Length: 252
Image 1 (cartoon, rainbow, N blue to C red):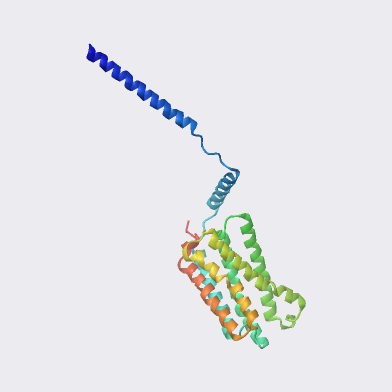
Image 2 (cartoon, helix red, strand yellow):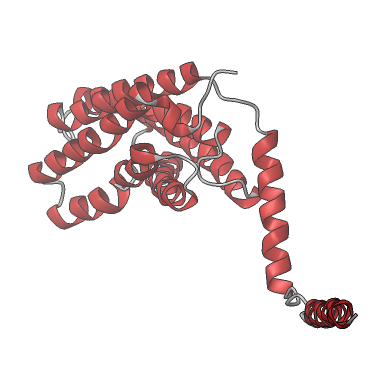
């Protein structure tokens, strides 16, 4: 009898102990409330959600499009670099001016193709402001190309004030490309070399325009400008041609 009583007492004690610890654990769970979400955290979460939705809604960009863009950039950049080595930035003859302008035109056309590919892949980011800026950059490039054609093919226009105003869009468009290059590096939507090299290539204006100003257009400035195009844009074109997947392009 005494052993049975001891068994009952042991079971009762164990149950009481277990119930007490369980109750305490549940009390602990109930009293530990989740940290409140701050307005800043809520805004970040909402932006992340919207960004993910926009990224998922983008149609796929074929690898072929990236390769063609890369080929255009490489060839157009070779032409532009060659103009600095052949006639320089400030040719002495009217024919030299025409040659220089017409050799620059394929480069400008290739930049249009590059910005279009960057837009389609949202390389610089998914925000409406960024997309809007890149569309404005396409407008700058169109105006710069208009100047190139008119300045190169119609010598009688070269001293007109309105054409000088149009000329402003050449450096403005190149500065716009520099901004896009930085935004691509920050956004991180392109990967590897494709992410880093646009900032190198598109730094042409911030690097070369001061050199032209400091040297007065001396031959060394032509070497710097042409060399920068070779190292920057030609290499960027080859990156897109050889590794299009780094830009997010893919075949559906």
